[in-house]
Structures are given as structure tokens and as C-alpha cells.
Amino acid sequence: MEQRTQGTPVRRGRGRRPADEVRADVLAAAGALLLRDGLAAFTFERVAQEAGVSKTTLHKWWSSRGTLALDGYFHAVESALAFPDTGDIGTDLTSQVRAFVRLLTKTPAGRIIGGLIGQAQTDPDLAAALSRRYTQPRRELAVATMRRAQDRGQLRADVDPRVLVDQLWGACYHRLLLPDEPLTEEFAEQLVANLLRGVGTG
Amino acid sequence: MEQRTQGTPVRRGRGRRPADEVRADVLAAAGALLLRDGLAAFTFERVAQEAGVSKTTLHKWWSSRGTLALDGYFHAVESALAFPDTGDIGTDLTSQVRAFVRLLTKTPAGRIIGGLIGQAQTDPDLAAALSRRYTQPRRELAVATMRRAQDRGQLRADVDPRVLVDQLWGACYHRLLLPDEPLTEEFAEQLVANLLRGVGTG
Image 1 (cartoon, chains in turn green, blue):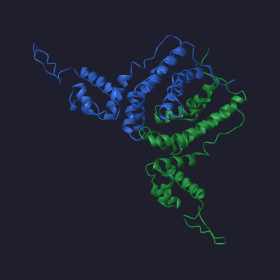
Image 2 (cartoon, one colour):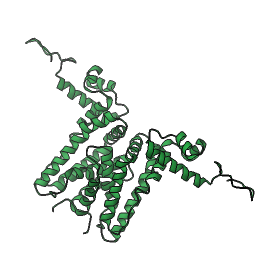
Image 3 (cartoon, helix red, strand yellow):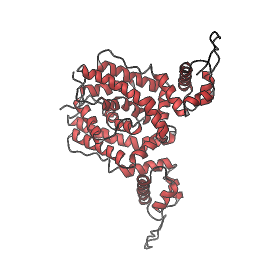
């Protein structure tokens, strides 16, 4: 958008950086703020301050505090939730689900995503944003990993990987949101083992 | 508590009935009101009106609207969520999880329990009540059913039934709270089949 006369030195002040660079700074600041101080302390004001941008800029890109928090959350946890690909689906699922459990239990991420899912139950806009910006993309990554395993013959071809998403990561969310039983890495291992080996004797 | 001179006719007016009878009336009224009009319309006032008791009586037994709603919910859904015992764990789990899905999708129960779980994320008292009054007792019923199947040799003895609770009912809650994929009876059947048969090829 910005017009610049050739030869003019680039101003490094705010409003002059390319939009995608500013956006990346905002997401990094939002993610760091969320994981450090939690959802209650998360405001447009503070993100603007930490990212060195104006509140006007933030409001231009994010319609609500909830959607900014979601994008910041996604950004912050993306590397922790990467899907490994060792070629063995049992190994890959176990290490990914264990990493997910660690993220939920050893960092403020669990309380944050729990809070967002909770709010989404009575806030249709947040629910739509949560799905589009976070849970759908995460779900697709998991399904793609499992489809590759089906192509390699490691998972039954007649099984719907979308159902397995609910029986692995969904089971973890269940213990996060309804903490009647502990959410542990051993639990993550059992989730994968139960599905791969089966629990029936027939 | 009540003192009555022998021979005096029993007054049927409010405040004279035995406490457990009044309590049962309140729970029935609370459950019916919840399933009919949802959580937003659920107030002490309206429950008192429909049950024909005073608000003072309600406040004596329930410290908050949330705990009264929980007890009403439990009461209302108890028969729909009974655990069958045909002697075959596959048949029993499939029909129970299908009934759970029907309850969540074909009645207002899904929105109600979703709303309660959502509120519980930021309300520690409600979270404690939800666990003690609803999810723990439901969990225990499921575990008891699966332990019987282990005793009959239909489920592997080395599997923890508490983990299966998260992979069956927890998977349904996942689709209820994060509705990226449909919550159907076919899904319920797949949940049980995946676990009993296993999805690995090894």
C-alpha cells in the first residue's frame, strides 16, 4: 500500500513496516503475553503495548479480544504441537499426544484453551473463530498424518481418521475440561495403545 | 422436625410434606424446566413456582443456580443414560453411547451440559459440583460396566477402563463442545468398534 520515493531511507517507526511483519510481531507478542499472564490479563491495550503497534491497527485486523487471543494462542503453540513423521504411526501419535498433554499441563496453555472453549459455549462468534482458526486446522493436520499411515498400511483402511481425532486429542480435552482423572503422559500412551491394539478379546 | 398431635389430619400444604418428597418434586420440576426452556431461563424463582415450594426452601438445599441445575439435569437424564447389561460389552457400550448421542443432539440436554461445562471453566464452585454431582457418578457407572466385562473376559484385563471412558463419552463431549464434525449415532458405533477391534494392522 505504502508509496515510497526511490532512495528515501526506510523509516523503521510504526506504521511503516510491511503489514505481514507487523502482524507477525503482534502474534508473537499476543502469544507470549497469553502464555505468560493468562487470558484474564489479555487485552488489546497490553498486546498493542508489547507489540509496539497502535490499538487501531489491532482493531483493523481482529474484531474481538477472543479472536486475537486465538490467533496468538495458535502461533504460540504451533511448534510445540508439530506432527513428527518417523514413518511409524504408533511412535508418531504417541509423541505428539504426549507433547499435547505436556503443553496442556506444564504451561498456561491448558487453562487458556479451556477458557476459550468454555466461553465459546455461549459466544457463537468465538465458537466460529475457534473452529476456523484453531481446531479445524489442528484436526486437518492430525487427519493428514493418519491418512499417510493408512497409505503405508499401518492403520486399517476402513477406519475414519476423523473419529480417531476425537478418541486421542478429544479424550485429552475431556480430562482438561472435566478433570475427574489426571491428564498425564502415561494416559497419552494408553490412548494410542488402546486404539492401535484394540481392547477387545474377541 | 415437624411436631404433630396424634389424630390431627395431615396438612397437604407446602412445608408439611416430608423433605425427601419435596426434594423429589423440586428435582423433577428443575429437570423438566431445564429440558424444556434451557439454561438461560433457569432461575430459582421459576423452579420454586413450578415445584410449588418457596425460594427459601430452594436456597436451603442448593447454594447456587448452577448446583440446582446440575441436580435437575442429572435427575432428568438418569433414565435415558441407564447402562444396559445384556452380557455382551460391545452391544451394551454401543447402545449406551448411542443413547448418549441421542440425548445430546435430539434434546436440549446437549446445550445445557455444554453450557454447564463451559461455565465451570471459570467457576471453581460449579466445577466442583459438576464433578461431584454429575461426571464422577456417571464415570463410575461406566467403569463398573467395563470391569464386569473384564471379569467375563470380554475386555483385556491390562486395559484401564477409566481411559476408555475418555475415548468413548469424552470423544462425544469433544464433538459437542468443539462441533467441527457431526455427533451422530454412526459416530458412536465407530467409537466402540475402533476400541474393541483396534485400528492398527500390526
